[in-house]
Image (cartoon, rainbow, N blue to C red; front, side, top):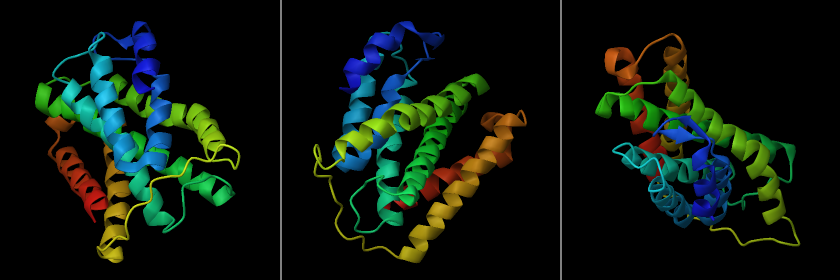
Length: 220
């Protein structure tokens, strides 16, 4: 499904050789919530294969990691916020959580890919950062959310993957969530103040702390 949605839009290029209009980015949040790690690996591998049709480069490694995070991070966050509850959007509170975890997932993906290309490949583009964040937030919101509603309705209900009971410290896990949000917003602000991670020690530190806090969310 991921490849089938990604490849046709390779012709709608936004930054040549790097990215394009990506309605397929509606998939990771919904697939992650429904299928957990399997859905995240599917998105990551699907994106890597889709890159072979026009945008494959050294940055594809970051794209692989970014698409895994785009699916797996919302899955982890849902089960932190709604312990023991199958993913659904049957209440305003749950819709709000869906929007929030989509936003955090989009920011995480933008930081990982765009800032990663800056630090590791010497290519920085604020436009790329913006495109990734918008692709990964707006498509899950306006396409992914309606699809998720259909997939989780009583008539078409797909049994979601439910994680085993988390054994880590809830306080530490919650601290990682808060820290990841603060650091993500800090990086976002610095990006639009004109900083690049490769040229700003403070931004680099915030990015590193962000990645460590995300790792804590995932592992704990």
